[in-house]
Length: 330
Image 1 (cartoon, rainbow, N blue to C red):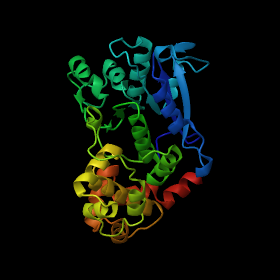
Image 2 (cartoon, rainbow, N blue to C red; image 1 turned 45 degrees about the horizontal axis):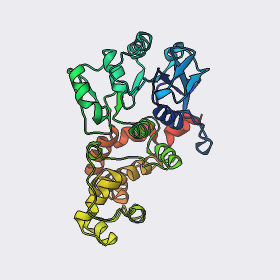
Image 3 (cartoon, one colour; image 1 turned 90 degrees about the vertical axis):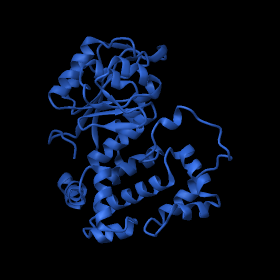
């Protein structure tokens, strides 16, 4: 479970600054701010805050009023820093101070799209990994050469500081945080409500230049549904291509165009997600989990789960298994 008070859920606070993007704010509200009656529990305590009583959003689309002041940031377990398209404009000193104080007392920091500029300007990213939108990559490197920018990924999880590369990847990072805090089962439930993939392995390189596809774009939905029902079987990329009645090369292009990943990476990700769900539901025999999820051996299961979640299967079970859930509900 995320770190929080025993009296309340983990508190997420989003700082809204002048000229902030409303889309990323909406993504944060959708993931962290909504009540989840279908889950029978509240995942997060969410709030917005700003430096002043009136905050003009990007391009004057609207003005945000009647939100908490920056003092709300002092209570955040996770602080989402401002993201602004005017990356060359210095951030408010008060906002930067609030971000620095949150980091100093151990809060987790999230940055969406240009949010990495805010954290770098606050001096918190030197020597650390970060992501930002590909359009601003060169500008970011020039201004902050000590930051290890990773321009081709959707997001970077560097422990207590996490950054997403673009607007839509705010959803990718948000779901990753839910998965890290609450496990794969809950993250999948949130993603289903969003009608958004729970996990995309692809990076943002695909969005820099988009060639015209050589074949008509056709939905992968039926193929994905068919494969998800057979994850425990020895499916290969060739099997997927045969089912779709296309060549493996054509299938690869369609996966890249529609999902931003390869067929093999998607298949592996789905198998790891299934393995995590089986562990969460109480299956303790690793060989059974490996077989039912299609990962083959317990050794491969251990390696894949650790790579995806940062936890061994036993540690994952302690954190997200049935006993953990009973402790939370007690």
